[in-house]
Length: 427
Image 1 (cartoon, one colour):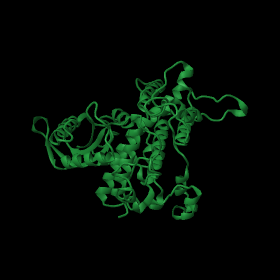
Image 2 (spheres, one colour):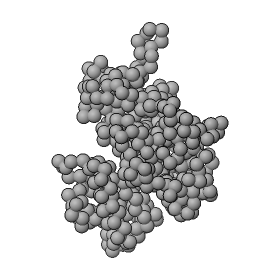
Image 3 (cartoon, helix red, strand yellow):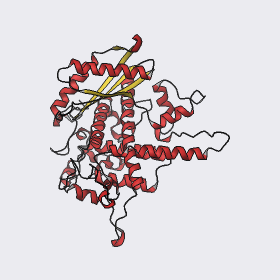
Image 4 (cartoon, helix red, strand yellow):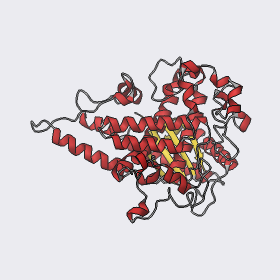
């Protein structure tokens, strides 16, 4: 069986965050350490074959995806975890790092389908690539449905309601992990007005009063700007906390799904040695990028886009997010929002208030929507028009997608465009 094991490592307690140069060095050390491993001897002498490793380093540690062949999920997790610890120990510069987790991430929707069809004629294929094709049959993953099976001769409606309520609680429970954003970013009520302490996303390490936000105003001003203008002088209507939690939790869940499935897209492009425009296999997300550049979306581009997604969602969940760094991050956020909508809609949880909360979040995080021009065939060529730069329009040519908007923006060193200090996907 093929598995993708996610290894998360962190710096030792009290260590300073890695700067850009240190992240590049740590990434090289990790890649070299894992590349030296072709096979692992698991528990009981079982052989585990290492197929590929992808490393992404952030200021507080790293996320490593290890593709392996193993007889069982548990064997894959144990073997990869042991190797990760050994790789860290062998490197003098990484010796103090800690392996936080080594696990195969399972998505809620795939778990439900597997349980409902276990050992039956509708059981999903055991091979991961065949399973992806199974789930992407049709328009895409968002169209997959998972009907609950009636029990004891009943119509199953009661069980459906219970399952939906349980899933809603699970997604809402993820909301606190979106540390960089408090309720006000989703149009929710100010916690202080409800007699509750502010979360870090509203006032804390990176959100102290007076800090400059995306639009050149203080974070508190931006938070309150998240609420829509009141109708005809009335008070702004805050979105209920349950809808805010559901929207925030859906973004956290969607981040895990998006990252895992982008890894899958990379593997598909690598296997076929092709690009998105010429790929015959199903892809999860890369086909959602502006189609005019499909020939440029090769394996290297996909890796850079994945690292950008990891870097952005890490900042979302560790409290360090301030603003989007480049056009590629704007596209990542677009895919993240689409995944959140699809997940909620799939389980009947995308009510009007939740959709509005996600819309308000997008309005707060995006500075402009210039990147949408890339999807408009009527504007073909606008990305190459130099006159637009003087009009304050974000450069849209693909060679600038990983270029920081300005000197204060962050783009991961692996992904950043060559002119800004990185490599170009078009070389």
